[in-house]
Length: 131
Image 1 (cartoon, rainbow, N blue to C red):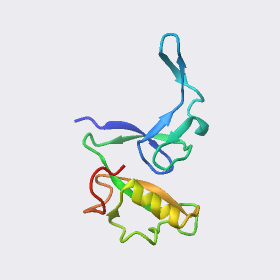
Image 2 (cartoon, rainbow, N blue to C red; image 1 turned 135 degrees about the vertical axis):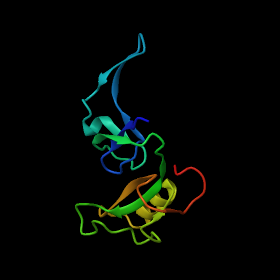
Image 3 (tube, one colour; image 1 turned 180 degrees about the vertical axis):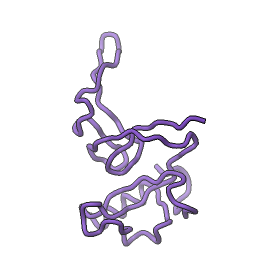
Image 4 (cartoon, rainbow, N blue to C red; image 1 turned 90 degrees about the horizontal axis):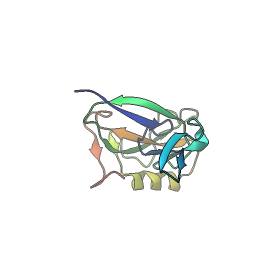
């Protein structure tokens, strides 16, 4: 079975991104990327930023299982979990994770998408779809 290739957000590693393309309205053809993937021409619907993007190969059955809030790599919180998270193996819905960020807004914390297999025996802290 061949790995599936996804374009992911450099900020949170989610695959829920949008890229700006040139579109011909007369024939509905889609052309090249508007800005060759410049940050202003990308949007992550999960972390709500204009990130850089990168290509990743995931297992064919890989799926997004939730989110965590972690210390940004350029802050003194790097490698830490957000104080509102119960444990490093807990995974939250996008809504729960955003609430954690809103309670303690700081550039020290960032959203992180968690894919199946990223955490051994994760504890899912929500019901339903992670988004």
